[in-house]
Image 1 (spheres, rainbow, N blue to C red):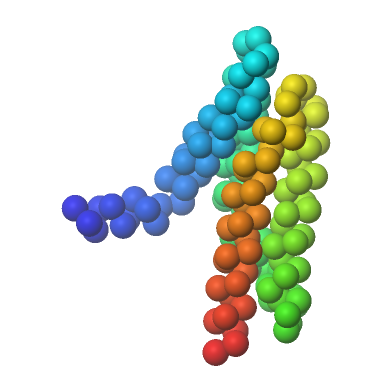
Image 2 (tube, rainbow, N blue to C red; image 1 turned 120 degrees about the horizontal axis):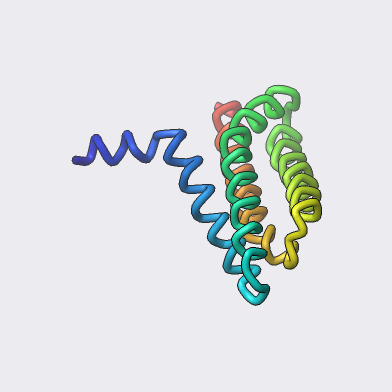
Length: 129
């Protein structure tokens, strides 16, 4: 049973599906005061973007970490990831007509930036050994 659970937790598909459901659900919640289908459309847009970012974020951090050394190796990759993610989220939600853009992107941006900082930190610590 534990081996199955570990395999499930390590599955990229599970991570992508979880990002879609969790962050899409958050977007529906953040836009709940608006009439349907606005909250649902916001949820689908955020879910799709979060799924795509989940697929790409680790690779982006890996690539950026190889391009920097010293303390920059720790700070620059998550900072760039945060800035690019913010731009993508703002642009896509503006194009989609999401009514509550800032509340919609707050949670996904916090989660992705936190992941980027923690993952970048682990890479930095491994390089220090």
